Image (tube, rainbow, N blue to C red; front, side, top):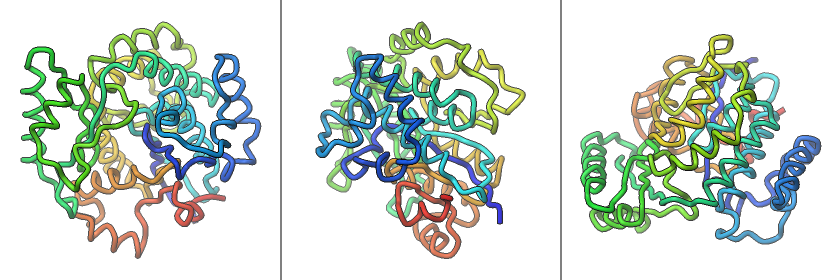
Length: 344
């Protein structure tokens, strides 16, 4: 029986200690694909992915770097996308933040090699310049109840802090029931001082993360555009949903515009992952949402995004757990038990 699915590619922060060895565990059969990525790394004077993935020790300071995390996540995600069972029909592809680059390759708008070049180039540029930082803060309730009033309050606070002299702060990613804010040290510190600590961990700074999806990244976008040609881009094989919720259709995509969005708006403006997921649900009505590996942390944001629109009767965390037990809506390939239900 064929099942339709929207494929979701995760972004930074998903290759952690538990994921060390992900490529070796799950994708030993994709030696040719990984060898191509390793060759690009070696040509750039960088450590090979297979060596990084095969290391015996994980350190946050090393593996959270943009020039290491981004290519490892891309390779893991794309290899997962190539491992889906024949009974899975991908009707659309989207991604979160850096996952947009992987989504381009998974949907066929970039070749596997060119997608890797984009990811490795942008991840390296981000790390070299490391402009600003990011933090995460929730606005939804404990059962994922949407709280638009609290969300508005937090965004209003961020906007006010951004008006202060030498303070930069803006919404980086709309992420289900959470806000990812980005800015300079003054802006981030002021926000941290202005909000209560939640669950003993929020607001949470993200290690080695720059101020993604804000105007602070304009120099990175400009350098990326100078290094990465629009000629790499082609028509997608399946619909692509970007960080505005806009759909890029096979046969109807302006390749120059796709390049311009990818290395322009996508880098310097807010990434609305919530809208991307909700538009995917409403436009394509899939049987499943499949979040590729590495990691499983993006699943909550996907579920919260769907709960906000009461997708298939799921209005909160309790509903979601019941539905998952009966007939899963969401599969995380980073979870071995779930993975087996969608792989060949």
